[in-house]
Length: 583
Image (cartoon, rainbow, N blue to C red):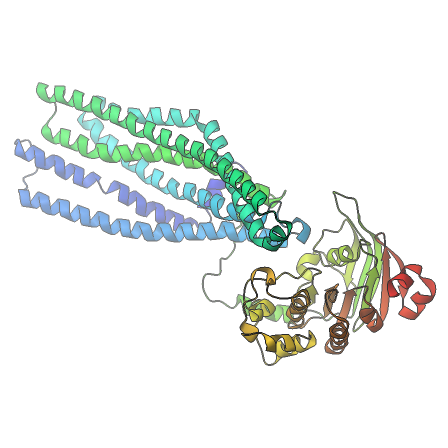
């Protein structure tokens, strides 16, 4: 997608709003035409050359009326511009976020979270700015056309001198394109590194302190900031140089006009009113020329923003950014309809996996030709040594990693997109490393889910977390800190389990849930989970004996393949790997 196509698709996101905004600002920019003509008549009346017989107070009244009308138009213009820009920016961010969330977990974003925030903030703002300025350029072009017609009828030579600087502005802007893009790209890149470093430092405070690396981390951050200072200075300096060129080229034109007007007035071919009209329009023509140059600058910078946003899509077409979907700005029944549709999804009777394979591109490790069957109500445990592929298996099954080969069938029907299919109420998942937020314990468990009846207390009980909550000063409303830093490892794991259990699902997937628990708590956890599941199916990744003892069926993974499967009694007799794990 070219930059122009990107701009066109943005402006056509809400064509009616864009047209209304363009009309409003065109009227705003055309509004000075009338005061200019009124001013001309006023000065001509002083020398007896006026075509209209208006008193001084009549002319003043017309000028005040024109000023009030323009003020009202500006208010309307700001309202239309804010509404259009707001929706355009929301559309870009919504589409970008939706694409990221649909990506497999291992490929969600190709950069650090801090850098991604820079994309969402700066590059979207840059695109929004360029699209918004297109309205100004259109309105000013209309003003330039009308004013040119009026001025040419008065004096063609003078009019050409007014618009001559525009040619200079356009030429300079075109010559500065490549350097401007280079500086803007470098500035954006250095800003991304700084925001990424901030995100990483805040996320790894304890690791930095334990390693005694505070000084080294700060020095690295200083280097990033110094690089950002240099690149932003070049970017800003280039912009200021262009603005200076735009303004001074207009000033040169102004000087030529004044010199020529003086000679014409002395010769009697130019009235005082004509001079006043030229001077009055010159202010707005100056603004027009400057803003055309600014728009060209924004347009060139928009190409940098488009490249960066497209990189975040990781191969997806750029048109994904401008998909015209609903922004849900008003209350509607979509959420209720979605929940009703999800609630009506088909219950799990049998989940069949055949030939499932995935290899990490960098290491070549992964899983190969996995075949398994999960029956309704079964409790299946996947076990194996560290690095055997247990977590890779469940993440590939759930669509968090993009499978290379294989089929997944839900009740005999193929699952085309596991990532969007295996969500509540079909499936709930607890990852090996719990992801918690700097929020209350309650909000970390519910994550926006409605608290209905006793569902939260039941989830806390099943996750063996009720005693811990009772000991916390704020109970469920205790703030647990960034990534749950105020919780122990076992509490973080059980919080993630409660988050999963509060959502009724057909399939529960646990990945190494009890690795940080003491023996007694672990025993309670698996016993309660086994009872709480009701008719739900459980798929558990673990090598802990407490989990293995509850299993209906055990699958042993070795080097990414299924080595053996069966009950614990069968595997203890026939599988050396399982014997080592059990002992």
